[in-house]
Amino acid sequence: MVLSEPILPEVQGVLSGRKFRYPVQAALEIMSQLSFLARMVYPSKEINVIKNDPADNRILECALAGEAVYIISGDEDPLTLQSHGKVKIVSPDDFLRLAEAL
Image 1 (cartoon, one colour):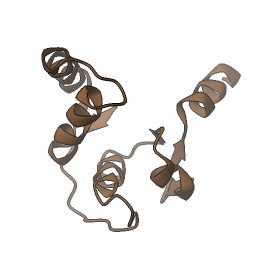
Image 2 (cartoon, rainbow, N blue to C red; image 1 turned 90 degrees about the vertical axis):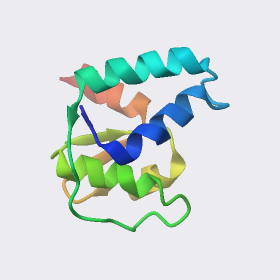
Image 3 (cartoon, one colour; image 1 turned 30 degrees about the vertical axis):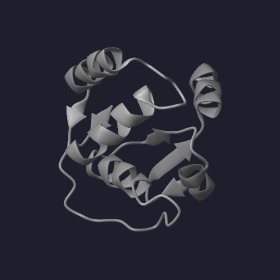
């Protein structure tokens, strides 16, 4: 798992936003754990392929900088790409199916 500084506020916002509704303190604790578990990367290349939600481009930048194999997302904008470079973009359900097949 890789993270980058530009996506940390986005992740925290999703955790405490209307989708997950974690209390702020719980979201901060999750962020702390994610930061501990993940490898921090520092993207050097800016990407602008997702027009509907430019913040999603930071996810692509992070994945490419970290040489990720998959981006796992429930967000339709990145999912419509299906891949970017060598990175495959899949839903959580599809990723679980792939993992079970291994």
